[in-house]
Amino acid sequence: MMMNKLCPRGDEDRLSRDTVFGVAQGSEDPSGAQRFIVKYANSQRWEPSTLVSSWTLPTGAPDATATPLTCPQPFVDSSTYTEDCLSMILYVPPNLPASGSAPAFMWIHGGSMILGSANGAGLNGSKLAIATKSIVAVVQYRLGALGFMTPDGTTNLAVKDLVNALQFLKKVLPDFGGDPNKVTIAGQSSGAGLVRSLLAAPSASSLFRSGIIQSDPMNFGFLTASTQQTMQSLYNGFIGCSNTDKACHNSLSLDQIIDNQMALFVSAYQTVPVVGQSEPIRPVLDGSFITTSLDSTTPFPSVSKPLLITTVADEAAFAIYSAYRAPLTESGLADACNATFGEDRTNVILSSTFYSSAPDARALLQEIGTDYLWKCSSWTFARNWAANGGSVYVGEYELGASYPGNEVAPMCTQPGVVCHQDDIEIVFGTVPNPSPAQSALIFEMQAKYNAFLHNGNPNAPNLKRWPSAGPSDVNAVQLGGNGAVPVGACTPSFWGSAVQYDYQFYANT
Image (tube, rainbow, N blue to C red; front, side, top):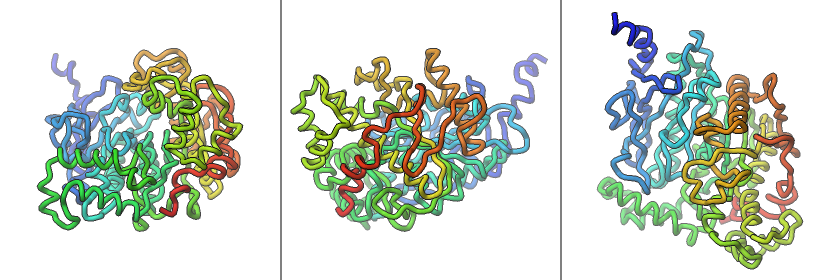
């Protein structure tokens, strides 16, 4: 009798599910959702991944309560990762209706295409699943060289991993009370770039209904096939293997693969300026899988999926205040801009009325960097999306929660500063000890996400109205603030026109 009271049969049933892939054993998350970890695809080194045929715990997971090992990456102990790393964590809210009508939210983590995992700080999806009455899946994909630098020239393995994740999710959703026709893909930073990659891949289109793009550095664009070929030649030279020598490829240790990946990461821009210094390894416009640039260099396709696109107020603050520890003079500002933009673009930027001088030019450089890499390029994308048939809602976080690690740049801990990644714990509801203002924003954003996941529109009764973007005015709203976001330099006549984005500037290289 005592055992029956402590472990009632109903609890066992809830944590053991019959699925199309076999029996799924889960655990109870402290925040209330049921948590299931699973390996969704098999991967061999530099080969396309393949969908699993049975429900299996991720490699290295001793039981259903353990978090999966990450994909191989720099700056962490090798005991924390495995090459066979394609796993996801499902968070299922209790008491879903048996009708199988719950939407799903698949989160793609960021990390400059070389870092991150489903176990990242703030990515526990339990509270978000409960607030939105949706099934939250946080997924892993192959990173860096293993996902993007296949020696034989095969491209976009990491993006194709995510296609397998979506295929797995759609198959298994009905067994958890989910609707396979109501899948939203979402991501932050490079994860948002991977959302954009899936939007540009026709073969993936039927696998999801809508997308959420948070802090995507859209200024970069996809790599062209010719740029990728140059990058691949550089990497093959670093590892000392020809493109066809499979025995050489397989003999490399993970340390060798990652060390040479980082050598490419830090030096590639010197040979191939178009790749930049922040995210040189990224998806490729190969013409067969990713078939459209989704930028202003080629005709924009007809689109229909609803999107949410957000940035944060001070996207570039972490990078700028980490690189420049002391106040920056106006001459230092000019030097910094010249190093990034070249003299012609720098002259246009610094002579404009959008960027007035400041005693410490780091503030100005931060504003320029935010507009250039994230905000204005995202607004250009939103205008194009709206002009070609899709509904899109644009916002900017004026309030956030300082993300673990951002304290390295003291500016990011200052009141009123919202740095890159500071939106993550707001969306997931995982802010430790939130202030009343943060709690209110968490409630608001999760309510908007609830509406969007169910209906493709973030507007619902008793919420601040979020107008959709149009072909000329994106109608960006302040999230955690009041009113509209000032257009400023994001007017179509400046960024993307008077000053080209990198994807335009280097379009012919």
